[in-house]
Amino acid sequence: MQVTELIATARTQIRNLSPSEVAEALKDPGVVLLDVREPGEAETDGAIPGAIAAPRGMLEFHADPSSPYHLSALTPDRRVICYCKSGGRSALAAASLRAMGYADAAHLDGGIAAWNQAQAATADDEAGPVSRASVTPGQ
Image (cartoon, rainbow, N blue to C red):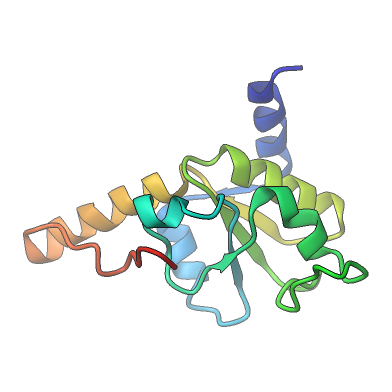
């Protein structure tokens, strides 16, 4: 099986959220936003404010309460939204969380690229020049 098939399968098992749906969901302080990219990617592409860094390679360890690497913000009863650069890794991450008992795991379809594009479009509509104020590099 090719990785594209794995991603396509994962997308059928999870909620694929648009940037506007993620922005709306983030109004709920109980939502956990996970950045599953590798360290350093936020420096080049920015990050969504409030996201918790949990690289894809460590996700299951961070999500498992019995793991010494568990992140306390991750509990199966909370809504978790994952994102990456373009949506592939985050789809796999959300599917993995679902398999681990996280009933409300979703991902940002199109990743930070889609988020940045949506933010730029919103800034163009509202203020003219593009603003990246909602994207915090290095976070």
